[in-house]
Image 1 (cartoon, rainbow, N blue to C red):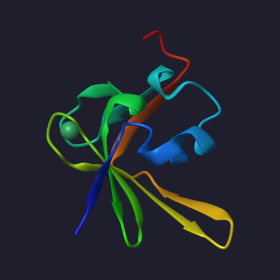
Image 2 (spheres, rainbow, N blue to C red):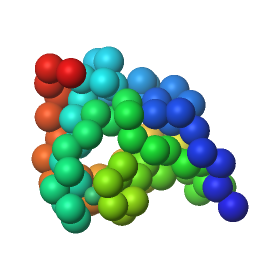
Image 3 (tube, helix red, strand yellow):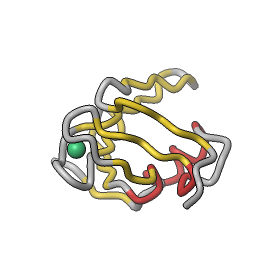
Image 4 (cartoon, protein in one colour):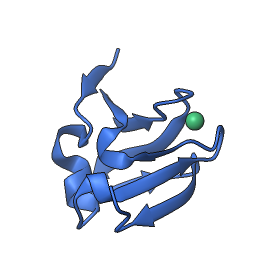
Length: 86
Ligand SMILES: [Zn+2]
């Protein structure tokens, strides 16, 4: 079971990226689509948060919070560009 969150993944992306998440652009390693992280679909699971590609629904990023630390699995992102013009 998963709960869909807004693009900021319930604020967790705002904690990880010190920028407006609409200015952080992720290029999907699977299909090559580039979208603002703040506009991607994010889902909350028991294990953490999953951010999916808007175009192909592949997992871009997994975020887990363990004992006050954030663990990021970003193997679904080919390129992460920060400070991009939106
Ligand atoms: Zn994709």
